[in-house]
Amino acid sequence: MSIGQNEKQRQEKLNDYVTTTHILSLIVIMLALILGKNLYVGNIYPVINIRFFLLINLLGFGAIVLYNMRFQLVKKASFLSLVDLLYVSFLLLIVVLMLFIVGDIGYYTEAILLLPIIITASILGKMPGLIMATVCSVILFIYKYNPQASIFYTFESNLILMSVMYILGWFIGSQMDLENKYRQELIKIANIDILTGLYNHRYFQEKIKVYFSLVSEQKPLSLLFIDIDYFKHYNDSYGHLAGDQVLSFMGDILQDTVKGKGFSARYGGEEFAVVLPNCDSETALKIAEEIRLKVSQHSFLGGQYQPGGKITISCGVATSPVHAKTIKELIKYADQALYRAKCLNKNKVELYFSVFDNLEVNESEEELLSSIYTLLSVINAKDRYTYGHSERVTEYSIKLAKEIGIGEKEIQLLRYAAFLHDIGKIEIDREILNKTEALSEEEWHILKQHPKWGSDIVKAVKNLQPVANIILQHHENYDGSGYPDGIKGKNIFSLSRIIRVVDSYDAMISNRPYQKIFSIDQVLDELERCSGTLYDPEIAACFIQLIKHEKNEPEVGEDIAVCK
Image (cartoon, rainbow, N blue to C red; front, side):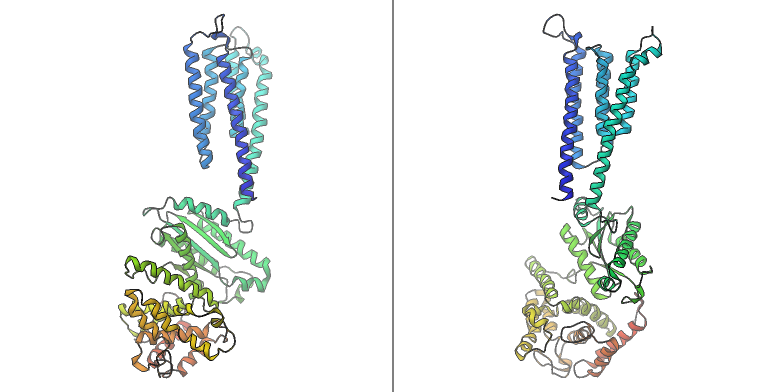
């Protein structure tokens, strides 16, 4: 059984004990009213006493209403101070009315003043218990004061009872303070990640449900997913102790940046989540960028030997209700945005978007489009060496198309085609995709079918039918040596020729089971060497210039113009 479950059971038992104490205290007050000696006249039937009738009803009705209110708030873990104050004040009022209005109701009537002290200390703790003891001592002094006797006599005659009041308030209140402190420690252990000081995954899942229930157009909820780039590489190089220091520093940054805006949690491993209520996408992006800059500008032990020369983070952002209608969607889309940030460049903040957002489809095609998106996830899982390949090909294909001067309408088709160009690989076994040895003739024949299979899959969506032909030809070579149909030159769709160049570039700089990674310079030499045979020479030349320009001027957001 978890700490949280144990604490919940213990809290329920404690509430039962406190409730029983309060009920017994109320019973004592009720008995004092019913058995009061001034309510009888020599027989077993009480005289009709308006004061008694009003008090007995006020006590019963008021106690039920206030206690029920408090019980409901305890279940909801809401703010109780005001209700608690009303609750104990009400009981004190009843006791005072009994003493000063009903009158003497039996021997040692003043002992009934102990009950508000017991209840106050058991709810609010030591200090409120002592304050209530002081109030009850003053009430006792007024009640017992005799103008014909000295003040000191009244004080001395009631000293023992006053002392008992303070002892009760101190003892019961101290027990409750210790209990509350212990409870808070258990809650902290159950909810806080010890290493980073952030909330843990369990707390994140519980709390985001609360915030999501308040989401509206006027009150958006943004979610950030953050991942430390190349963290395994750092751990392997400098050990887990150094890695823990990086995680701890991440906790400090997140707490400092997010304080007062939402809450942050360690989602798992080197991944973090930030929940920002009443925060739109634009504001969330600014907060994410602030976090990214703080990390990249900090000097970590050995950070200069990390890929990129420093420790960095990637961040994905999604917002509800703009992007997601459910909690599951919000988490999924923030994770997809993080995935995009990591597979494109790392040290990057990405806002969620789907290449299909602007695609108009009917109701029957929406489910099909969702299935296509799912197929892409399956392909990424099957072919671990091409993780993020489609995103990178899409990104560079669009950059290249803009440099060439292709219109926006065609760029939109290119966006779909580049993103879906490998979807036909869903039909290929994992063993073939990840095989480290040379493929057999039969296996190679199977692999060459994926452009046609991919084309057939997307044809089912009416508005994607033009994309199907682009996918079909994305492995055709400029000299006619490609597949599946051996088309050559300008007979190959221009958008397919763009994808052919970019697809080859990304394949050569990615870690594949059947080849080593090439340097960018080696890849550019290879593109130039195969220009006119595998690749359209004009498109290849423009792409080479584009990559060289980015390599020499890597500033993000800078406009480039190298082919126009």
